Image 1 (cartoon, helix red, strand yellow):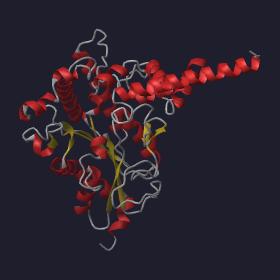
Image 2 (cartoon, rainbow, N blue to C red):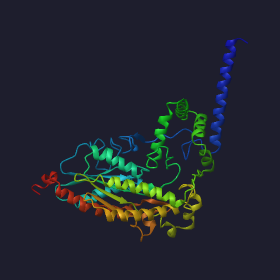
Image 3 (cartoon, rainbow, N blue to C red):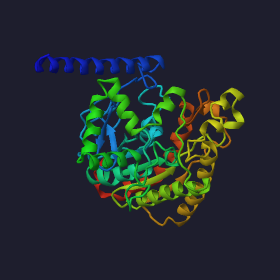
Image 4 (cartoon, rainbow, N blue to C red):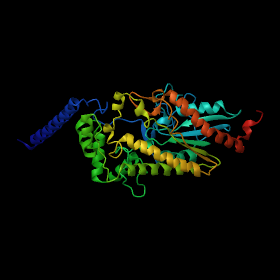
Length: 417
């Protein structure tokens, strides 16, 4: 056999071999019911509507899915092309920061979010000549350090805020290994989202051969089931057990730490960022930091046995560094309440307000204000927002009105009124 024929035969054999491996891999995904998806996404990585942003990690793609050029969500009164670097003389601009609770869930319309409701409430009580606008800066899974950095490095620096509301706390309690950082960077420690940590780790690694090959596999993974399986096995080998069992079995190491130890780490991180954010309050931009209410602490007494099965502690042993989710969440909330009480007592700033709304639903039936089946103890139903929205407005309204009265820039708005 000539050398050319040998080469052709070898190439054909390699191609057929690779094709066979690819077909076998796709067959495996099909057999386990995952061909069309990881919870619907199959092999290959899903495309996201997020884009990387310096400091804060990620934001929504500009102008997509009802967002403006900054990735902020629009209500029906907002224009997609709005320029937040400019502001009308008689507009009082409020930014509301937080996670998916601020962004909005269980909505009856785009005007059913907490920011949209707050805007209506403020305008109903608005003095003549003043128009309030509330910008929805909520993003899914955001923790306090991301909101603080967006406040300091985006909003306060260039987007002409008059007031900034932080409404969060629940996401900072999450101790799942998918979200808690590996604490790779000395000095930053755990005060960095896992997403950001992974991004910088990959950037640092891509300069080497291993990192370059990993990046190549990542790009090929969307076209080849085998390449996806190879990339996934290299980077997240536990994924296969989760996919096959359709259950999260990712176990995080306790590292010799008790649940109380881990809770203290989460509480300390959150309170640290609360202190930083409230220090941004000044004569030009007031700040309110509000600890959000949740129902996870109280849902057990209202749930049926079937519903409680969905929140069974045995199903959540991996959700908080190897400890039960519900127990850790309760302890976290009790500890944050204690720390907020200290912050409120010692708050001497005339430009920053600190408030704890975590007891807002203590005497209420969860089913009216939170979704029971399937359980959602964090995001409010419309009736829940009927309570939360006015509570936020009540907290900030006196400070907002005082700020308007003492700011000479607003004097022109009352001429002739």
